[in-house]
Length: 359
Image (cartoon, rainbow, N blue to C red; front, side, top):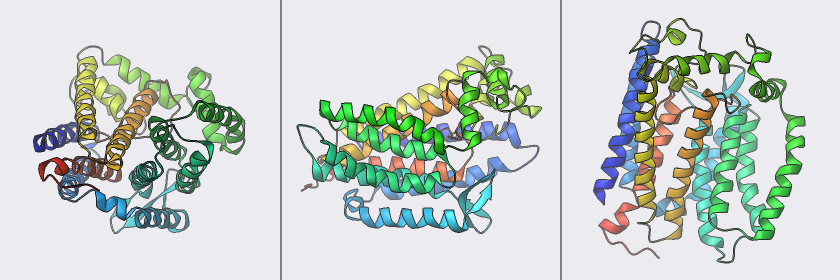
């Protein structure tokens, strides 16, 4: 069972190294992004190894401290955070920066997993339970939305919501959720910023503004399609090299990978993600306690949601919301939190290795 952790860790490292190679292909002529990402990878692997050996039940006991700490960090971002790309999402740490909204994903998983463990109802959640859980999710999501970061705020809500749904729902509760979703759409539209509305409208018809709001999507589709079966070769992607594709080392890194390595490269990357997710799901069955099982499921949900949104986004099937591809896109905060998630998930293995009695 300890072997499972090393398989998971090796797979994640392989995806990250593939991402660094991709980043090098994109930016080595202009900036040392690949080198910074390598440093973050080393830090992230160390973090995963440390968390792997820590009793995951400590997270259960520290959940409110972690929750409060995350809220404080998000408030600091809203007040004194570093601006970039029209948003305030980072805290400056010397020459480095950190994005607390990434940490909020793990915090939501921990707090909702503990909620499910403590309030468990075999017959399913009622509306009162869902309101309590929603408030726990909504507070950090609202602080992220203010930055503004609609993509990450949405992911926080999706992660928490899916965990509650997976743990069981009454039919009446499902109806109320559906009704709330329908009612909230026009309300959310009213409070959305103009550029966020434009991204959704552009998704329906990117050719309506090919040089403006639809530019990102169209250039990404061109990059993916031009890769064909085998791709154009390492460093030979024209959309990337000629800088037609914006955010090519962050949100649209997968587009560059497809252009240079084609359908075969895309399948290779998807296979690695499939192995990672399958192995993590195996871990969820090792847990002796409901908290541990849902902790791993939450991390799996986080990865699946991020992978799906990013790949749909760059393929023109989802609005451009600034969601990086886990382990692969440039970004130290995302990489660190992803590896922390692996370390936390795999720490559950120690229940079986050491035969600890979980109360």
